[in-house]
View 1 (cartoon, rainbow, N blue to C red):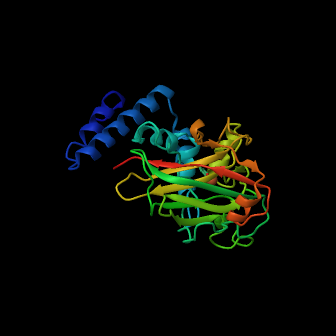
View 2 (view 1 turned 90 degrees about the horizontal axis):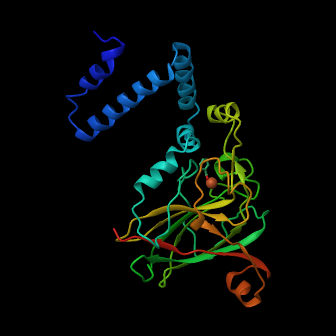
View 3 (view 1 turned 135 degrees about the vertical axis):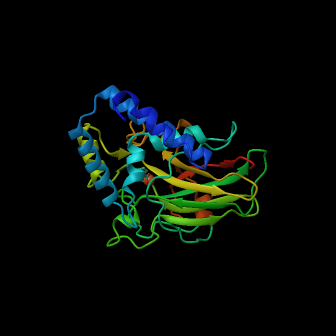
Length: 285
Ligand code: BEZ
Ligand code: FE
């Protein structure tokens, strides 16, 4: 009989016929840890019902343009823990960080140097760098996928009434020397969405919802492991208390004030301008 002392062993034993060994391992660990948690915290029926209500509401908040479960994983630090556990890059390669829930639409293909700030009400800046192999050497033809919130802290999918689709997004192909560059606006800190169950969780725990200013990247190249990462704006508020724990010191970059008329002409921006330089270094696969 499945009473309190034996139910864990019985529930684990019920998994013995799972054909996929990895699935058996994961489910066994999950059952053991869930049972240990329930015992250790003396979880009540009412508390478990409330948790089920919360998870149900989290699923119901998901739409084609909103992923509340990713958000939940992010604010619990699980997304960042998985990044760390699964990080395979050697020293010198660009460190990864969370994907976040806003990479749900394909970035439009854009020419090098294009402006991804289609609204144009932020402080203009240039982001440039090279995609390199950790072995050394540039990666011509590498693909750099970029997405960011606008100067007011919203992604295009959050405010389709004021931002055209693809605002703040671009898919760039590095040139023959592995270089990429584009124009945008300096991003600002923003709150993650708080109008759903994850917002309730943050309020119940007295946490703020803000992320420091950042731009997202996925860089990929033939023969190399893609990296999902951000650059964070040096000096931004919330670098020390990112709501999703995603800051790594190596990813914090100066958006330098640059007074260089000929470089400004080259990039097609007014002088002086803000400029972030950032190389994306990939590990061979
Ligand atoms: C983001 O940076 O887009 C993001 C990451 C995690 C949670 C919410 C937003
Ligand atoms: Fe973001």
